[in-house]
Length: 394
Ligand SMILES: Cc1cc2nc3c(=O)[nH]c(=O)nc-3n(C[C@H](O)[C@H](O)[C@H](O)COP(=O)(O)OP(=O)(O)OC[C@H]3O[C@@H](n4cnc5c(N)ncnc54)[C@H](O)[C@@H]3O)c2cc1C
Image (cartoon, rainbow, N blue to C red; front, side):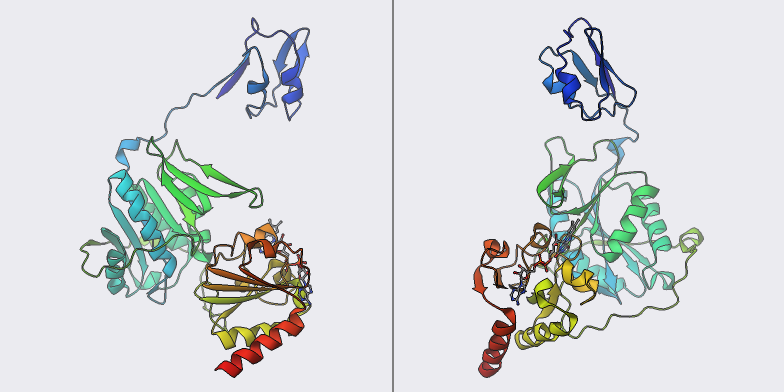
């Protein structure tokens, strides 16, 4: 890319000088001159009434796009159980593959997981690349990223999707670097543009706007998608697909950091990502001891306990319970927000819940703007009444 001032058209009006956010346009007599610190942001171009500033977009593709075809989903499994985000990715992957007239494939990595390949096919995959080896029993960054990038380089998919989960967020950026392409993290929408590029939509600037991002010069186009954002297809056990066993190479096994133990986090209630009902607490809970109140309500409802970042940052509850932009996206049937104000970063993680109930003593709290039902009151009085009524009804 390059920028130039067309001297014959510039009349020295200085509009571009004022428009440049970086102070990189100076006047030399009646001619605007662009400084060496220009980062080609383009803010000056539309303000010039004389069309005297020109940005030239010239690039040569680094790869031959015609070699790339197909949509891939990097499956996630824990102890051999396919995680539900994988089925959601296969659901959206199926739509993208249809739009591109190509095939949808899953990449399944683990140990003794061959049986799970059928689940991916039932959920929409045409092919499953199966890496089944004791070396891959537990997730580890290096071997997993090596094998996924080797497969991408060999088979050249056009689009690669993965979950924006703890594993996906660690694995996929490494793979993107290894295969020299871009990655759009935490997408909430995926579509195909007229020209065939993948449209990757995600919240930007603290969730205040939605940005649609393209990867126009590199392949594959890689995106991670949060759990519960896309809908899975209903499984069809009669679907037929191909399972392609992948041989593990010595170079795939290379690790510098060795995992010596895996410790499961103890959950008193259901995991929030899987729960149909979530009772979440915020700064209004006033301390860690008061989360017992939320646990009581969650247990009475058969749900899970969530939290705002304020509660997590205060050390009242572990991060795995955090809902929101930097926590988990949830979409339960019922979300009960207790002592949570409703900051945009919290709302982006829960506002697509079917029913939202807010308990807050401030009638002007923003959470009430997204709530289906609102209770204006002191949560320390309201929650015990709810628990009592629920227990009476059991
Ligand atoms: C980049 C970035 C990422 C972020 N990511 C996240 C995220 O993932 N998740 C997230 O939650 N936040 C996130 N935040 C923080 C977010 O902006 C807010 O600061 C946070 O959500 C506030 O948490 P809160 O609602 O619990 O606390 P507050 O905003 O302090 O609200 C507490 C609420 O409790 C009510 N209250 C107090 N006492 C009672 C009572 N006795 N009974 C009833 N109501 C009571 C008050 O009226 C108030 O509305 C992020 C911020 C940034 C900048």
